[in-house]
Length: 434
Image (tube, rainbow, N blue to C red; front, side):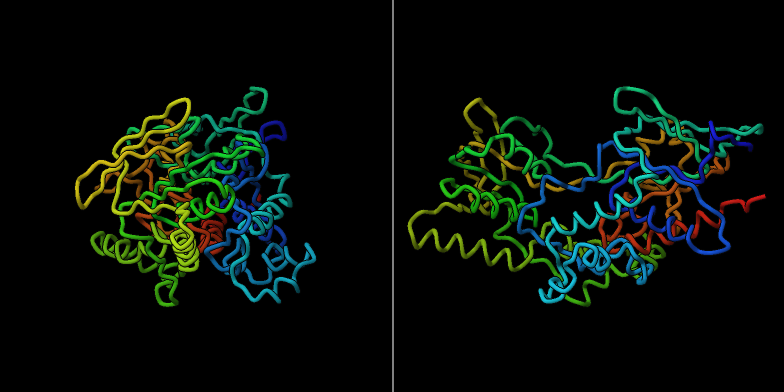
């Protein structure tokens, strides 16, 4: 196919520019710098006006739950100039961080690192560009050899990017319980800091309810307890208490690249077992130090007779009704079956996220995606979506592959290695220059 400067055909178009596709852009940049390699052109579309990653949960003292060595590059290329250590050197904090003797930086600092990486690759990104569709491009024989990524730019103008390969990093979307919607006083923790900022600096709510038992729920309860010393914080969860995460060395092997190979080749029942065995490494679990801090606060409240941190364990929210002056909740106490009324000025649901189904973005191409027996996209070991023979262009996923590649699919742990594997697949499929 011939191209022109006015209508170029890129080797790759990316949807989303969060950590996963930033890591892929870095891998592409480093690929171009090596001698005797064909150039691979790429354009990424990001609907935000600039880089941002869970900004609503950048709590001032929250730390990462993953080692800084699992940054965007180190496990793929330890000599990369895009490593977290390179960022620290650039920021003038390398020796200070070494003296800190920690593997787990502040979440806000790691966000700054991600933004630093993204800023160095801005020429390949179209910010403020919301993808509205993906259209197949067919050759004379009717086969789909490329895609047009259709995006709406700031101001409403439409832009098209044509590419031989597509990488979809759909991210995660906040999950609310069925029948519960977000409102002025009912939030998901994804937007916590934005909503608190909207209240204004002088706001002094009398009470909050935090629903959930995982790391985010515990962080939200802790933050609200300390930020609003005059407020009661009601923590609502169906367990007896917060459960500690399993951060032991052997359990953490589930996040190693070799674990992806083992998971991918396992029969479906074994995959289900593996996910079940190791859910306590990541899902609905809390860092033990934070559990200790919350218990200490609750115990101190009892000693002082203040009881500002109130734990409603073995309880579920049966009903929630938002009004102009607050939120009325009804809790089901599971052991007794009794219903307990609870009123709060604001309710924060820390009820997790769900992966975005990439087929929602593929438009007519979704009909060509091969599915497994459970109706999920079939995905190759190289993260390429399986399609019927009518499609020859590559469609790759970064995220939404937990069912095929395991628990690390939505986490930072394997980003660097994964992007290297995707790049190897892309380069093998790219025709040599004439």
